[in-house]
Length: 231
Image (tube, rainbow, N blue to C red; front, top):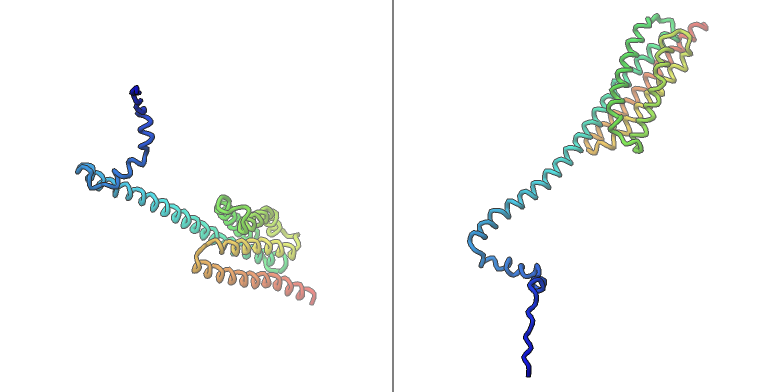
């Protein structure tokens, strides 16, 4: 019988047979590790875990910080709408007095209020331009308000002049104020805080009621003047 020499398996085949699983028993038998290896594991494993957990926490903190920053910007935009509404209501009242009553008003007085309105418009546009999603309810209301802003230059001229129809001017100012109040109401759900949301809704309801009263004041002032002129 001839002895046929057995061919030894290549080294890489033996490596494949061992594979990664050959490390598992060695890792599991950590009691047999050399002391320097144990020390290194004790030092480095917690450090690696701490770094990983720290990265997760930082990522969460950044997300929360971004959310708080967005909420702060929404609050700033909402706050900017308040002086806009007030100055629009003031200019409407002055225009109604000038165009529809016998009360003397200088054009400079109305122009000063118009300049304040233009400043308010600039602040609102700068805040809302990059903050609101155009497809969101608030973004749609914002675009509607911006569209109303386009008619303000002509409305300022009508308020300063003497020939414009007073009812049309009052109605035009009221449309801008209503668009601003609509945007303010649409911003409330994005505040994402029950306390802020409840407070903002209450303030918005008060402003809507205040606007209704001020609009009626302008109309009544003109109506009383017309009645006196007829009598």
